[in-house]
Length: 257
Picture 1 (tube, rainbow, N blue to C red):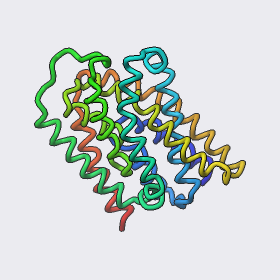
Picture 2: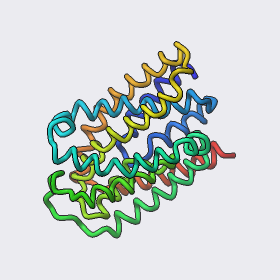
Picture 3: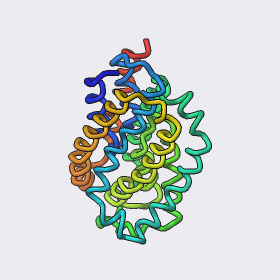
Picture 4: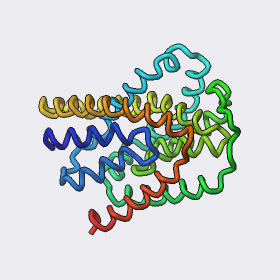
């Protein structure tokens, strides 16, 4: 893995982390296309640079994250299911799922179909969005359970939480913002857990690459989050579903031959 690979993966992470198209899935497919060996460092890199995108959310939503107690409580309730499931299956996920392009292709394709079907059959929401404080704790835990599906690379944490939240009755713009906030403890915990186990083995050059990837993903995510907030107010996610299906088909033809 070289400096150019790092910049490419950093941009991919920043662009895709908060879109319903799977940042991890994109990085795995990009790594295969760039012929980057699926080493333990590369697997850790794919997890850890997500902190750059998470820092972007911390900057943009700092009041919500650090001062709005009712919202913090709901984010914490949603985080619990993912914390439990991720902690139990961490070793299996990293050993068998991360780096597995075939799993990503299937997850992208099936997830894309689900998004298209959901958007076509989901009943329109009320014209005014709910405040985050009006998300019930039952809804918050349910959103967390949906998010747990994203332990499978290619599912997309953003897609699982947004579609799951809408299915539970949360308005579109509200669940998108809640998904941003929920990413902070979720990806933060995943990164800390992985780095505690893997960081002592990193070389100085690997740490440098990780730093560059972190910085690039942070700057890119700042732009994407701002754009997505405006986008969801007047658009649905069918386009993202179509994109997922097309990408899955192309990846199956090109990368899985």
